[in-house]
Amino acid sequence: MIRKLIIPHLLLLTLAIGACAQPPKYLEITFVTTNDIHSRLLPWDIPGDPEKNIPAVKGIGGAARRATVINRIRAETRTPVFVTDSGDLMYRNSYIGRSFHGEADIAVLNATGYDAMVPGNHDFEWSGPELLALIGKSKVPWVCANLAYADTGNLLLPPYVIKEGDGVRVAFFGLITAETTGNPNLYLAATDLNLEVLPYVEAAEKLVPELRKQADIVVLLSHLGQGLDAQVAQKVAGIDIILGGHWHAMLMPPRMATVSQPTAFSLGAVPIVQVGAYGDYVGRTRVIFRRDDSGRYALMSCKGEVIHIDGTIPDDQEIVRVLDEFKKTLPQTAAE
Image 1 (cartoon, rainbow, N blue to C red):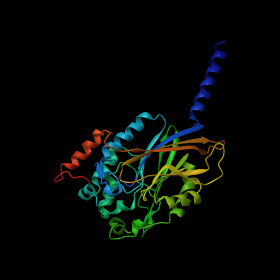
Image 2: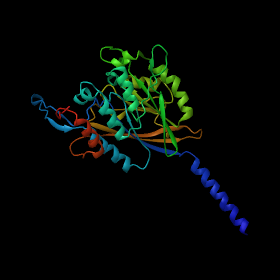
Image 3: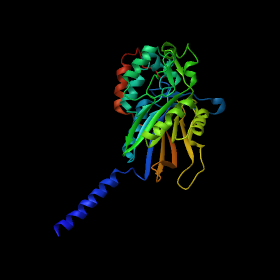
Image 4: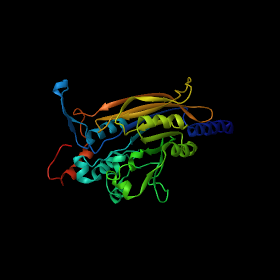
């Protein structure tokens, strides 16, 4: 009798462990996104236009408020949350950017705890040695699959990074605009380091099939602009969502690039997300995938929204502390 009782319990335990090891049938992920912040780390004002009856707006944006929103989303979301930036994080014509050559931007990026970023063309406005030092100080992975040293062909950055949430592997790979090497007087690091931008479609076609073998979900972090994003989505099979930048567009709800016939369990489209510029909005995109019998996830649902960063949002005190350290060295506190 004892052996008859023990064996079924062991069998049930084995089955339960096996079931837990299986990837979930339905998967929900939240992507929290920024793009084209351009070193706007402090709140800033929008001037009005009385002739057009447009009122001025005081004190929008700010890295400390963005961090509060990001941390709130992390705290209130039970499913995996990934926080990404899609380039032009830095900008030398910003007061803080000009003062610290990207050091403050990287410190805030680290303290906020992003999961990955792709650089944009304006992130190359520093000298080559300065850029390499900034990359070295970043605790956040920079990824780009189409930016290489012209003399060797070696990539400047890792092409992708894989993150895990709830046992599901999410690959983030990056693509950057050809403008990065189009202005040697502006994008100094690209000239100093003798960089070339590789064709974006060819780079994605080469990389995505390999990522599909390693990850369950494939995400493109793009600094190409929405027109080229749509081209990549339609020409390169296997990309699940594109989190973009460069055009300063507001693509929320996400623009859907049709790639196949929709079904009851698949939208047949790749969402393209972009949330304006200068950090006065943070994007939140919720996607739901369904795993088929082959183990491949298909996008079933996509809902996105933007959160306006204004004075109603309190500052995250860790980011305040980080910024205060930089502001101590300034001759005066200035708005950006």
